[in-house]
Amino acid sequence: MSSSRPVLFLVSVDSGCVRADPDAQHVSVMDLGVTRGDGIFETISVCDGRAQALEAHLDRFARSARLLDLPEPDLGLYRQGILEAIEAHDDLPELYIKTVMTRGIEGTGVPTGWVYAAAAADFTRERTEGIRVVTLDRGLRHDVAQTSPWLLQGAKTLSYAINRAALREAERRDADDVIFTSSDGFVLEGPTANVILRKGDTLVTPRTDQGILPGTTQASVFEFAQAEGMKTEYAVIPVADLLSADALWLVSSVRQAVPINRLDGMERAIDVELSAQITSYLLGRRD
Ligand SMILES: Cc1ncc(COP(=O)(O)O)c(C=O)c1O
Image (cartoon, rainbow, N blue to C red; front, top):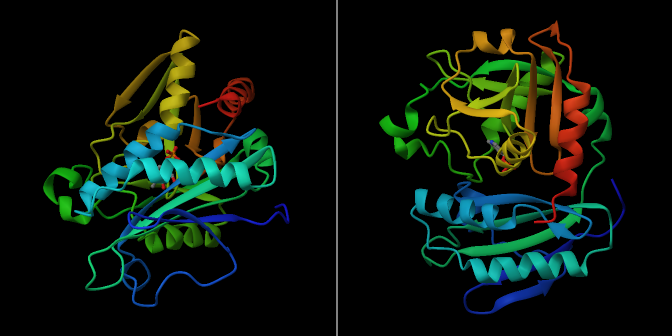
């Protein structure tokens, strides 16, 4: 990680987009984002000064706000904050941006918003050598988004304590990451990533109506695959298909595509060539 300082912009409808000291305190102890995890966020990769899949991230930010009955975020202000934060940050090959909007200080009804840019960690080893993954039961059926929309599965909320707990469980099981499965036996997503399987010349990912996040990186990987003449498919995927797949990846902004080299303790071959092509495509995206 670089010692480069993060750049912070506070975003509000009243004051617009205002640069602020990232080391100062800005969020109230009464803010519902802090006291209840009640808010939304996006994490966006920046490669060579360009925010990747920016409009897709902003659309998903607005979608998460709707799912939480939050006020519509002013996407123009957030876009401005993102672009200014990149401009103001040290010129590094890979940064990440976070956009956050909480329900604000209890009782005010006024959301709190901010954007910051910071240096991204170096994920070269994970991208080339792969990671060890365990499957963990999320304890919800694959149709939870239809049966129980109040559980907010598929919204990118600030309530990531469960996702972090799952990663600690992975560590206890001598693994680096997780694939959540539904209680009725289907593949869902990782705590911070989507899952892609290769079956022959087809890339398959779980259908996004199963209470999972529609991934911007997964969408880019599918664009790449289609341009290369591969087939792509959104499916309801039984857990057993993970074992029979030719290759597996977790894909997300910032870390991009990482191949899975061990699943539930069993070694797996990684697709070195396709992984390298996907990484090169993802890092080369200019919007
Ligand atoms: C739960 C979850 N699923 C999937 C993703 C991948 O989304 P994206 O590729 O847009 O970063 C993320 C990203 O943080 C996530 O938190």
